[in-house]
Amino acid sequence: MSTYSLKIDAYSHIAPPRYRDALEKMSPKTVTYMIDPFPPLYDLDSRFRIMDRYQNLVQVIAPAWPAVEAIADAQKARDLARIANDEMAALVSKYPDRFPAAIGCLPMNNIDAALEETERVIEELHFRGILMYTPINDKPLDSPEFMPFYEKMAAYNLPILIHPMRNRDYPDYRTENESKYRVAFLFGWVYETTVAMTRLVFSGVFDRYPQIKFLTHHCGGMVPYLKERIKCFLDSGEMRRKDEVPRLSRAPIDYYKMFYNDTAIYGNLEGLECARAFCGVDHLVFAADFPLGDTEFGNRNYRQTINAIDEMHVSDEDRKKIYELNARQLLRLPI
Image (cartoon, rainbow, N blue to C red; front, side):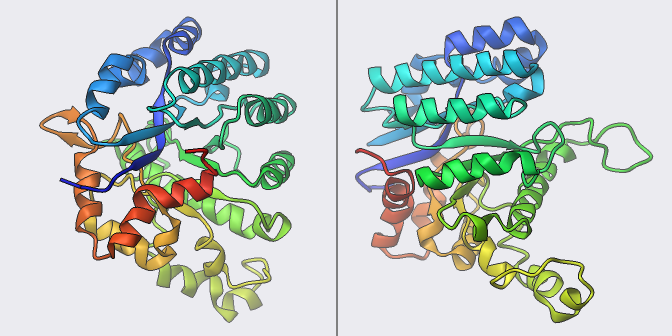
């Protein structure tokens, strides 16, 4: 059992009841499939019972799937995002000892509204970051229309949380119509994270907006494990001579190390050690994909992730960074 005084879950999903009901009116099948099987998303009593099993655990709450732009047109997506954000703000206000902060939901199919909502949630509601799904209605994160958003978030010096999404309608092979054996979810999401990171690196976002910060879900996708392959394919002089990758002011691998990464890989100790070796302990942030991630005897919780972090070959000071201090700094938390 971990004895560290505070654990800040920096990426905890939630769908407050009013937001869940709004989603259901718009897309009942989505709620049946994505929300209702996980009661802690919308039932606070269920959520609190799990949290109470772990001493001094707090959650930075973030919107649950689906992306609002995936199920609604531009105007309705704006309305859904506002409901989600107002509900999360109310929870932070009512339960500050449980929820020290929230992460904003944006209608990314309505960039003007997304920019306005960014200003509202950060300046008025005091949220500590924004969540973006990737891809955004099949558009890559380096699409030109999203650059004003990156400029704004860099100015706020608050992170963008990247959440991957890939459904069965992405077939594993071109000769098929849909993905099989849960490949789209199991491996596709990790792939989407890796692709998004790569597109952001080579679009020059980090050079253009030096203050920009991204936090990936599921510990940086494939990047930590494939470090040497990335260097071979993207850093080599041969590739640059062929103009297969654009020139950057730094080696590409250095930009990949600028991402912050959460620990939500289901208690995989070796995976956490690999990520730590790649990005450094200062870029690892505690999260368990709650309430969709860790399971213990069939119950959703934090046990696998906490056990793995406690077993990491790091100092107590570094462990405290992962559990608490990195989130405090990245999100500029008031606690």
